[in-house]
Length: 356
Image 1 (cartoon, rainbow, N blue to C red):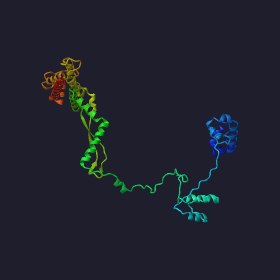
Image 2: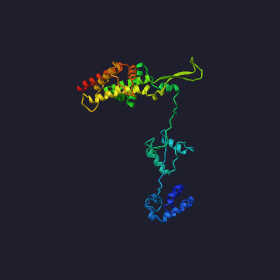
Image 3: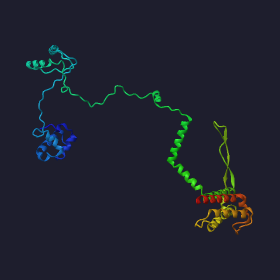
């Protein structure tokens, strides 16, 4: 029998026992005996199984079984210096052989005489066949262990640059360039410039300025005292105490005559009528309002209503004669005229550039 299964552990024997229908929970020796008996009984069917093929090759009656042939042992001799034949005879007769040599087996006197006669021509003969190169898979051992760098060595290993103003400027410039590319800063700047460079945007900005100034003047501001405990701030020559802040009185939004009447009056004369006029009196003959006609009509209305007060548009229960005076006193007589002039000039300049 073969000792193939005796070299395997219990989990590997279980892989062989399951295909044969053997309980893998048996003891190891009982499991080995049953596996060998079952493999011998089913050898014809298991001979082509890759799992049992290696086992069958180890059996003595297998055609692929390896027969151990006794080979003569080679004698390894390590000679450090050449010896004369007389010294060799003395070394053979010494009772204590050297530690680095292997004592050869005793030979007959005839073979010893033949060997000595063959060595007379050469004082030392070492063949490569007798001393094969021995390789080892052991990891290489560093003769000197690697120690961590000291703070001084680490400081000397870091390259030191001359941080001048030029280097600092280049570093800041490269950082801003990388940040602008990552966030798309210049694309947003170009889009904002293109948007603000149109006559329509200029008219919208002028109208926004007039509305903001009108709301700021109409909404009253009240002083409110915030009770803050009096204390001294350490390390700063300052004291805390009750603070007075100004907040807008938003209850004005509930009044029509005080807030909404001036707002609607300004929006009607400053935005609605000019847009209505610029849509029908359109120099470009397009389905949109003309910026140049918008600027001209807005300037004309502001001059007749706010500056000269020739026209007094009034509606019962909505606008009174004091509404026009209130709006004119807040936004001024010249503000609508200046805004209309700027919008008209930009419109003419944009038309000239588009013709080129």
